[in-house]
Image (cartoon, rainbow, N blue to C red; front, side, top):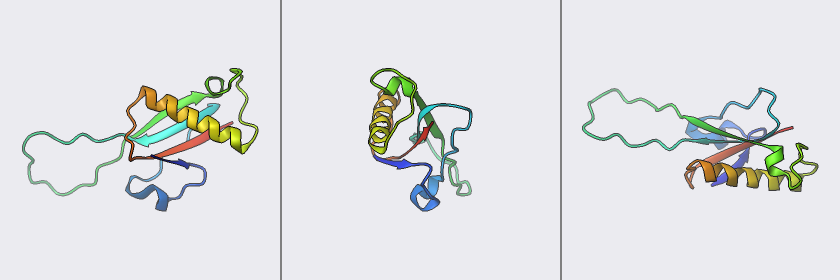
Length: 111
């Protein structure tokens, strides 16, 4: 698992899946983005033209109140606190959704 800041990421880091869309709806917290693991098809395959599968970006939002020790909705004051909040948000997201261990995970801190 590799956590990458969405604000500083570029397409070279993202690879073939591209970049997820940033959260723009007034959310205040940490957003975790990852590509859902595609399940292999069962049965025979027909001969079709090769296509590139469109990635399905998963999103888990964690509000600052769930990440602060005092349950306040305050954004992180410094880089060390922001890193702690991102790791905590990833742990909460991974406990609720299966995130493949070898996937590239993007995060964004939405103040």
